[in-house]
Image (tube, rainbow, N blue to C red):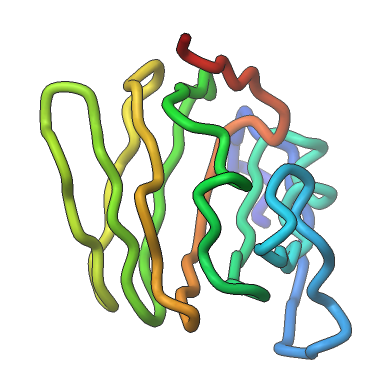
Length: 135
């Protein structure tokens, strides 16, 4: 970074390479695994970029139901497979490889299903944010 560069987000160089050992159990959904790409630590918790993949078939009982999140920013990009979601005011949407969505702060949504090979890249600011169950 040059001396005259300014940023509001602390950052340092972080490099991440694919390695199976880097996937860990998802914090909230037992049928998913997450791979932290190191950005959260490199930005002091300001930004999170991670991969999520399926580790077991979709089970509606393991999903949180309708809910919403309160981050400053949240974006998803499908790398493999498909996922069906329902969004407040939008209805059902199927996302496939190459699909992406900016999930507006506070929009109610629910995962209705996904393929066994589903993988998604996610970006959120900040790392920690509130999730609120509806109903």
